[in-house]
Length: 439
Image 1 (cartoon, helix red, strand yellow):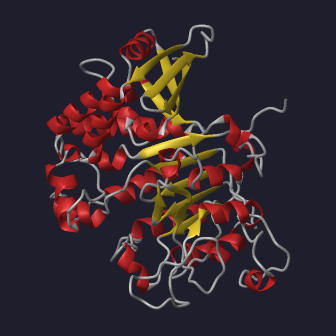
Image 2 (tube, rainbow, N blue to C red; image 1 turned 45 degrees about the vertical axis):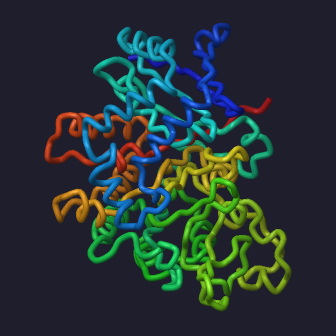
Image 3 (cartoon, rainbow, N blue to C red; image 1 turned 90 degrees about the vertical axis):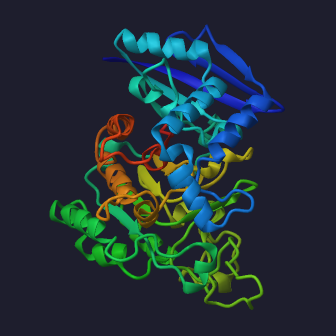
């Protein structure tokens, strides 16, 4: 099956402007204008199906809505939501073009640069006809704007050149108890670490991970200093499974959460509970702005908390391998802001050619079992991370994960016992930013 590629670009003004062109027909671009009212209505319908609390909701109420009564908790409601999103955001002419190429034997790749209004649209679930979804006919990737490539701090390495290097795992690092007030308790309570321990053990046995790093990856603490030291060893890829946070109005605040406290210097402010006195034990996130600037603006005393002398940039402190997976709540929030900068772009700037992230808040394994009547042994969100991990070992990880998503969609559509809510498996986004040839 041959391939065809279509570039899809969106811009929000009062309305949303959506333009596309096929690479094999560059002189025949097309576009539509999506009215503000239609875009906002479809966006609101999607928001009501996701995990973040709606105004006035308690935590228990939002879980019940998302996992029991929401669109992603029921096959018919999900189909209806997907149809409304299709009508709003996937132009009929483009649907027809994709469908016709697919039926002619072409495998389509849709390369999207979404606008903030379209950032969380689950494109894979949109319909191309009465029976088939976009994922049936195509793979979907996100592309950052060209400006992200300009002046990139580190050029990504080719996968073929680095694939035999060790993998770096950072799995649910412990965060101070004060951070629980911000929803940052352990993502893997109880025996939840066992699948990751087993997977890392397999990599160690195969020589794809360093034996001494099992305790580091799964241990009680993993700090930004640990990350710096671990990345001094050249890596093939990085898998982070834990917490992420972001404010759409402050894109540089997007952060992962390691075991750092306020005692270490950083550009992200520590998390201090309302009414509490700031303390060195307060949690400090590792934000996108840190990954960009590093200790470049720190004074000598602050740099000593990193055990370094001279100022160092973020890409120098934390050089990213060719492939990065951030399996954490809404880790791909970059595209929700008009100023495109967050964890994904920071990773790309630091050397990543592929960043797999999530477009919305993920349910925990525990919440899925407790609210959606799942088998007590099921670990859907852990399975998501392990699937991404396995795919990132392959020549074409995006297609590997697309095939898995097609199987998940089939189980969901057929209502089998193995079916899992699309809140999990439709959450993935893949930002691709390979090395570009010199002008």
